Image 1 (cartoon, rainbow, N blue to C red):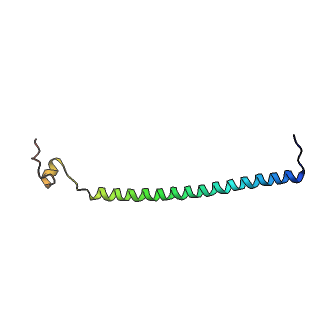
Image 2 (cartoon, rainbow, N blue to C red):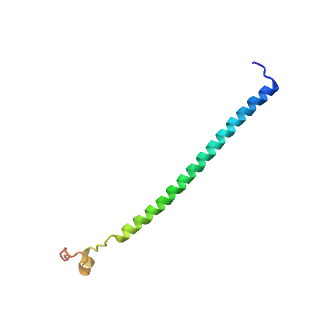
Image 3 (cartoon, rainbow, N blue to C red):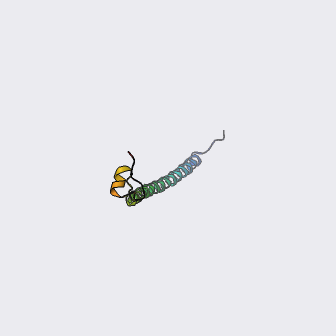
Length: 82
């Protein structure tokens, strides 16, 4: 094993530490971006659910059977048979 001088070993350690710190910063930035993206996706999902509820509420309701016939909701249907 080649021997290194103390100052050279310290420089190598510092360079390695600097590289690791750089990785940590990049990963923290990536995590922050992913969290923001996930938050936006959750926001869009809530908005989509809201639109789905509005669409469901806007759909015409058709009653079937006897009550549909009585209410006139199913005007083309013949009266239910007993």
